[in-house]
Length: 193
Picture 1 (cartoon, rainbow, N blue to C red):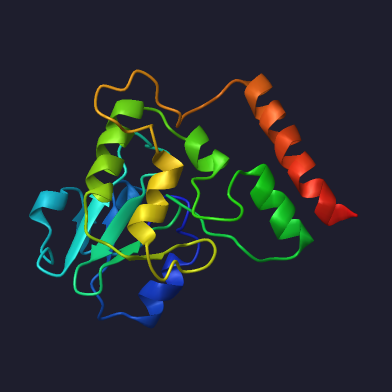
Picture 2: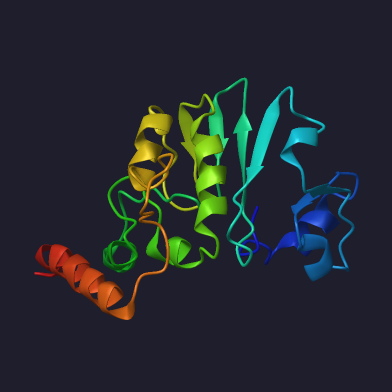
């Protein structure tokens, strides 16, 4: 879950009244009308840690995403941390290319622009990449059926090394954004002919 994915929560609560619902930090405050039974506030005290691990992606308070690892199936579950778009109509291809999230497992430009504390995010992602996972279930795009851990390192390669001076994830200047959009549009041009 994340703060971007709360549109239909009331329907879930109504449809499954006996279910216990956990929310990321801030969900209960954003939705006082919903009865959350568990707050995802400390991954080290998770009641289901024998089967499921979770990690908040710190440093992104406007997103507040939590990612999960289902240990028995070695499956990582994410909402916005990475996308995996490989097929789609022209509009989807154009939007995802402009967003830097087309063709393989990728962190979107929009996601990267939400980073407020690079060191905190770096620490969270480093912890996730240390988990033993093979498959990734993404909130956007196709499931990554295998080699997910190796493929998820690509979007963050070089960005999360210890003592690294430069982290490529983060807000870039408008000039960089425009240049990136032009580069992505040029890559899309063959599909528009």
